[in-house]
Amino acid sequence: MTVLETRSIADQPRYDCRDAYVETLAELAEADHRIVGVVNDSVGSSKLNSFRKAFPDRLINVGIAEQDMVGVASGLANGGRIPFVSAASCFLTARALEQIKADVAYSNTNVKLCGMSPGVAYGELGPTHHSIEDIAWLRAIANMTIIVPADPIETAAALRWAAASDGPVFIRVSRMSVPKVYAEDYEFELGKAITVRDGSDVTLISNGTVLWRALAAAERLAEEGISARVLSMPTVKPLDTDAVVAAARETAGIVTAEEAVSGGGLGGAVAETVVQHHPARVSILGFPEFAPTGSAGYLLDRYGLSAEGIADAARKLVTTGK
Amino acid sequence: MTLTVEHTTMPVLGRLPVHSSRAEQIAHIAEAAKQIRIQDLKLVHHAGAGHIGGDFSAIDILATLYGAVLDISPATVNDPERDRFILSKGHVAGALYTTLAAFGFLPVEDLATFLKPLSALNGHPNRNKVAGVEANTGPLGHGLPVAVGHALSAKLDVSLRRTYVLVGDGELQEGSNWEAMMAASQYQLDRLTVIVDRNRLQQGATTKETNDLDPLPEKAAAFGFAVVEVNGHDHGELLDVLSAVPFRPGKPTFVIAHTHKGHPISFMSNNVAWHHRVPDAAEYQQALKELQ
Image (tube, rainbow over all chains, first blue to last red; front, side, top):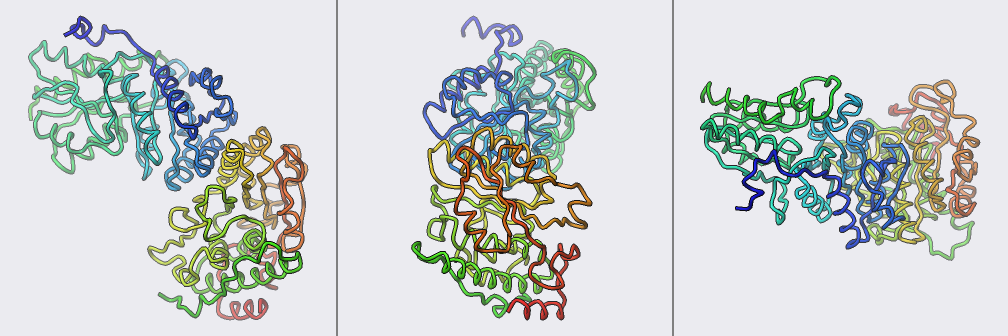
């Protein structure tokens, strides 16, 4: 074991996933001329300046016009291109929701939607800029794949998978810095949970920026003699129902923790599965309301999406029993 | 199934040879438009639903595009270099299906399934179910951005393939169209042609009474388009204009086709009631008589 691995996940170096995003997109674009970027003036906020420099004709900036942006991406796909739409998740998913439904999902066009700075990443900018609803909205749309990577390695792997797949994909790309959770040789597999820590008393299911917090929670629980399984669930749709049912069957209960609304997202998907296949106790952590003013870190802590908050939800499930 | 083969007997017209004269092409388009209207009337009457007013407003434009303008045939329907036609006013799907059948993209007998359970011929077109459909439209204001995206792909490919999109005039009240027009102009998409079915009627009133579009030519010109106005029921004018684009190098084209909803049926033409009214038996016979 390396020195790095003996430290708590919370003490490890942190990375902005947008760096992995732009690096991987450039690598993919270099290898495949069909790949283009499409933005709503979001060049800087998506960290795409270097991409624009390398591929000036292949970064299409429609200006601040999200409906047009997604429609244009659909038309580019009709012409054989593979568009990666890159825009703040709040505007991409809310402003262009009908285009995502009709022009991308229902039309089954090969469009990759990259929701930048999702969740509460914009912190103090407030609920207009928070994108806690995106997963719930897109989960309701048929023929939509939803991926929420947890670190730069998974972000890069998910992008490579998306470029190679044919059809609509939504990928969240966070600006909130996170430690690496995965080994460098990690390969993304659609619809598969990854057991990032084994355990038998309780299960923590998480993804995105909250996954490492769930791992930190499991470290705390271990010190108290509680064995917590941590499932990484990068694919919210289609969900790995087998892994969820196994967790419901084998442990005292499930805590879901995500940077999203507490209804309709990962927690909702897990609860729907558990209720129908193996009823068990589920505790859903997320945002039940418009968040008050505060930094992203403050807001995650406030709504129980901290190591201590997640551990506390797990303790309650364990002590009240199966 | 209430619709039988006797209701789907239109002839398949196909395309004239490329060297045909203008007069021959116009006659061909006129015959196609007539047959499409007769078939579409039957379709709507027997299905008991549809948007016949808008269908008849757009049929001369569709017949001209498929009959003599678009570089596309049933054999090249998946060719990457085909011209693209996007029907943004997706509610006139009946007119599109009938046109596709007239030119051999869709078996004529399939029209009998229009709006029936599990039919590929939904009330709004689906590209994954009907060959020749380029985009799943229906919600208004979607086709023009998709057309801009396709025209951009052609430009990136340094291809001469063209993109045509047909929008309703009422539909231009959707802001997404104007977003797309700004982008089309910014990217100098001169192989993109926007055709407006300018029948001046929307669902329940005139466009003027609702949210007036005029001065439409000036607005489109201000958004960077080369603007042309035509009689949208004159096959010669439509043919000349739609085959001649681009009019100005570097500029996308905006064709305002002046039309009448329900044209040319005496009791339907320019009558707002016929947005999605279905002709009863007497009206059906009367309309059929007028078309023949």
